[in-house]
Structure formats: structure tokens, C-alpha cells
Image (tube, rainbow over all chains, first blue to last red; front, side, top):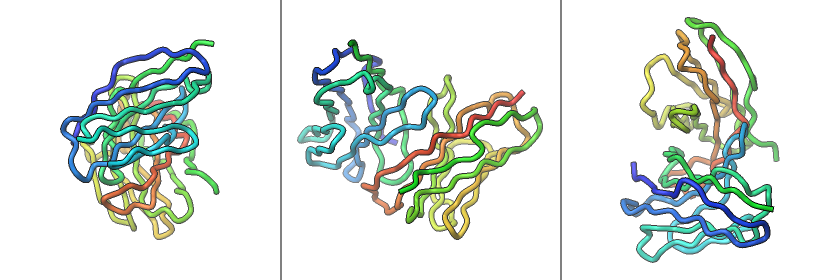
Amino acid sequence: DAKTTQPNSMESNEEEPVHLPCNHSTISGTDYIHWYRQLPSQGPEYVIHGLTSNVNNRMASLAIAEDRKSSTLILHRATLRDAAVYYCILGANSKLTFGKGITLSVRP
Amino acid sequence: KAGVTQTPRYLIKTRGQQVTLSCSPISGHRSVSWYQQTPGQGLQFLFEYFSETQRNKGNFPGRFSGRQFSNSRSEMNVSTLELGDSALYLCASSRGEVPSGNTIYFGEGSWLTVV
């Protein structure tokens, strides 16, 4: 399975944009890039996913590099409720291989 | 639209016993996957069922098994429980097409403690 590399942690200030990076140099042509987040004692929550083009939804934006070897999750205005572990995952089917994720802390 | 429902939410079992966990996917979803989450190993894929057939399997011993019914509901079973099986077991559902841009939705999980 293709692997992703994320920093262990990141801090942000409330109401400021947050850019969470992810490297996936061994991505295959059929791998989608998925982002999930998880709060303590809860199941992972879908954030966004994409294949080649940048994607936007009500929660976030996903910027995918032209060579698809990296991507960035963008939270446009961080809130305290965005503090969570964010997972960048590659998958071509319903099998997701989770890494350790990045822990996002949001300062008031 | 109801989300993925898992039962029971919490349970305690004794070593050597077996346990069955249940998952009801989102209506219309034909794929159900199971994951184990522990502090040491993180989130690990157990298996995936699609239209009552196991389509993918992770690296877990044969004590871990599952099945899917015609209504897409799924159960997973762990036999001969070990202390190390204590974990959060998560069920996820999606429409299931492959290759997939499907959104995968997770339930809240079943917390299993083995004593």
C-alpha cells in the first residue's frame, strides 16, 4: 500500500487559515487522496477527498500537486472544534491505510 | 440520513470468550469495512465486505472474522479473546465502487475491553 508522510503535530491560532501538508511520493494512478479527522473517543470523520484536481467543500479545501506526490488540506478559518488528529490516506477502494496522522492544536 | 450505527457501544469480556459486534451501514451503501484502533498500532484495516462477499482482508489472525447479510448489515466476530484485542472497533460504509472516489463514513465504534 502506498504510504503517506505527515508532520506529527501543528499549532494554529483560532480564525486563521491552516495548511496541513502530506507527502505521498509512491501514489499510484488510481489512488484517491482522502482526509479524515478524529476527535478523542469518536470515529474518524470524513473531511474531503480528491484524485487530481483541487477540491473544495464546506469544511475544507484540498490542494493536490500537479505530480500528485503531495497534497495540502486547507482549513480556511480554524476554530477550536477543528482541534483533532488529521489523517491523510491513499486508497483506490474501501480499504484505507491510516498512518499516525497530524495532531492539530488550535489556540484561542 | 441515518449514519453508520454500531452496537454495542461498550462491552467487557473475559479472556477466552468470543464477541460479536454489529454494524448497520448507511442506507444504500453496499460496502462495509471494519477497523481496529489501539493506542499502540493506530487504525488498522480488518476486512471489507461488499454484497455479502469479503473483498479485502487485512493482516489479522483467523480469530477475527466477519460476515455481511443481504441487507448490507454486517457483523464481526472475535473468538478466543486475548488481552491485546482490547480496542475500539470501527465500522465504515460506502457505496463501494472500485476504483473508488466514494466517501467512506465511520460509525462511533464499539469499545471492547478484555479482562
